[in-house]
Image 1: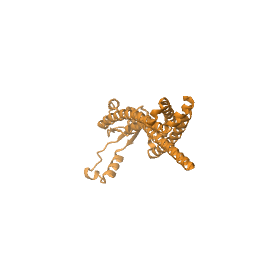
Image 2 (image 1 turned 135 degrees about the vertical axis):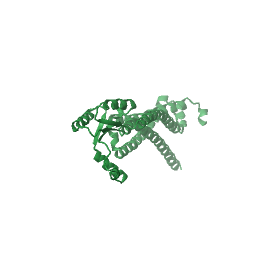
Image 3 (image 1 turned 180 degrees about the vertical axis):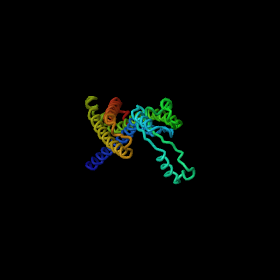
Image 4 (image 1 turned 90 degrees about the vertical axis):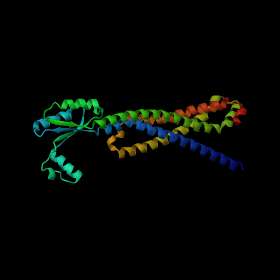
Amino acid sequence: MASSFDKYQKRKLISSYISVVISIALVLFLLGCLGLLVINSKKVADHFKEQVVMTIYLNDTAKEVEVNQLKKSLAMADYTKDALYVSKEEAAEFMKAETGEDFMDFVGYNPLKNSIDVHLKADFVTTEQLTEITEDLSNKAFIEEIRYDNDLVELMNDNVKKITFWVLIISGLFTLIAVLLINSSIRLAVYSKRFIIKTMQMVGATKSFIRRPFIWKSVQLGIIGALVALAGMAVVLYYLDITFPELELLKNTVLIAGLFVGIFVLGILITWISTFIATQRFLNLKTDHLYY
């Protein structure tokens, strides 16, 4: 009979430990994923900014030397990510492929212009920078027109600021929730041992002696939970890197390593502090209050 009761108690204890580990792992995993988002938010925003195209249309009278000089100056400019020359013939072929019709059959000639499509570096995709670049390039007589979607640029920059602000707010809120959830799980685990704590105290054990095994066990659970969370984060990061290779998520090795270490340390710290506070609370309780 005693053996059956002991097995029941052991199963109950293991079940309690597993639930604590799962709670810690899930909370740290979600917190880590949010951390990955924060770390890579600028890179994601920069990726979308660099999709904005500034098209420089050239006069038909533009000389080959002038065009080549312009291409070289654009390639060397600080604001250029890449520049692609598109001849009027290539533009006509592209439009034909897009519409499925040859518009030159109707107009009798090719009205399109030779152009250069410029993708700017993310830091230069602002209304002020684009205006300055446009004014500088417009001084060249052989450039007929420069076009870009200014409304899109303004909308994109406004949205990036809003998203960054809310991501920071959510990160802070999520960190607080993570601490509270893990603390709650640890307190429940310690609560089930409150009579053992009081018994040890009554036979003369010091508070530090009583706390030590509880803290060590909680730290072990925190380490296991953190390792599970880190494994999940690694899988998510690997999947995202394969799905969106252009973002080069794995190039931020220092920040990612720092995040992984931070999550691991956080798992240990929260469990240590939560267990210390929980055991201290029951150590200070009177025996009569243990039943409430």
